[in-house]
Image (cartoon, rainbow, N blue to C red; front, side, top):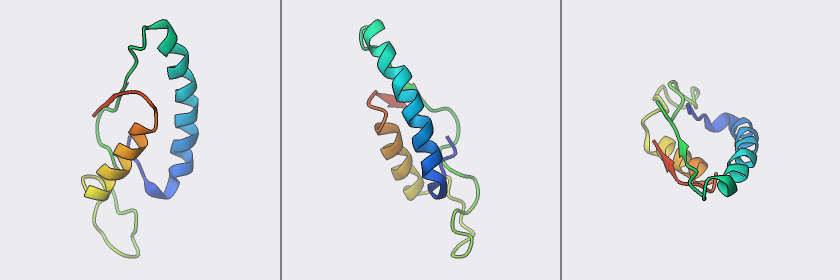
Length: 79
């Protein structure tokens, strides 16, 4: 996923495209549709380089943003 809070509009565009596909398949697979995210959740560098050198991946903020984003698909998800 490598979510980067600086570019959420890109993730929202992609999500909207996937929601259409997921919604189509909810009806054809008895509602048995889920989302899986493999690998890292967050950007592997600082997303606020002017404030900190801390990597974004693995932070509480990263996990909270990723969980909110994955919940927005309207189907169960696994990480």
